[in-house]
Image 1 (cartoon, rainbow, N blue to C red):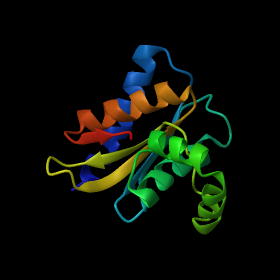
Image 2 (cartoon, rainbow, N blue to C red; image 1 turned 30 degrees about the horizontal axis):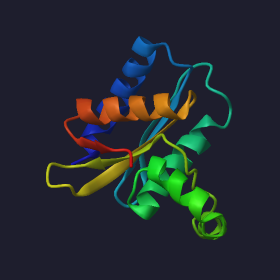
Image 3 (cartoon, rainbow, N blue to C red; image 1 turned 135 degrees about the vertical axis):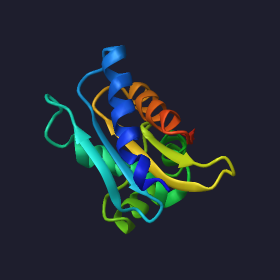
Length: 140
């Protein structure tokens, strides 16, 4: 279900970023099992932006909560999150920009991670892509 719409999510996340004047972004879309199904990094995005975007998406999916909420949890329980980051191979970036993709029944279909601008702007781009594809965005 999400695979056919993954490119739409990426495209509209980047359209939102360009309309809003955001810095160059990387966008990663993961399905519900954590496989990368679409990715794009804009010209000018820094070298490791994909890894950060992936970490936001992967972390959100690992905990089934948007990465904004993960940031709050990480501040409250830093030792747990240090261990959790190790358990997931380092793919855990607990700041806004990792947004769950839900269907109308609230079922998690996958996640989007965006990196390159401020965390709030990254999250806004991810949400725009998800909504444009006809899904519900859950940033936490």
